[in-house]
Image (tube, one colour):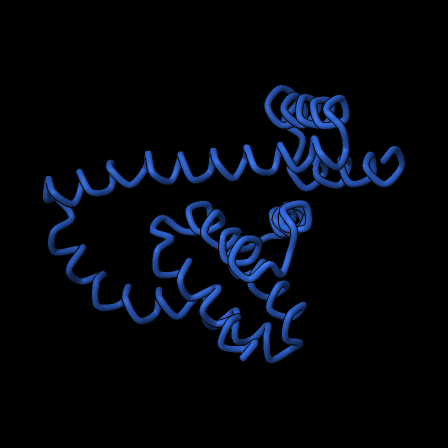
Length: 175
């Protein structure tokens, strides 16, 4: 039963997550945190942070880790397959159709209409992570890490993996 749940937990975000990893992350969070309750919001945010520090698509890294955590090696393989299966099944035939109609005004409008939805989903996930961080680490630590991360990433152009590592070290030493 767990293998079927792992498959569904990653197959559904794969189908509905139009736009790749960033749009499917909130859907994965819903399945993993709220529906199956395999991880807490805090644990999910840590998995997401570590996944972002590694190269490659975020959804497959998260699927591999969570699938392994829930079902061992077979669980990881099932989660990885479930993550890429919608793309394999749907995108190959749809690619020809999309290329045929790429200059269509309807296709361009559809893409423009999906973007705000993705932004709202990412905003809700960010708020959820912020609230979880405030509850577990306190408001001052959360604000400090957030502001330092912002300045390190935008002003001083520090690589995200180093910022995440620094936040992990900060948390390990002071929290």
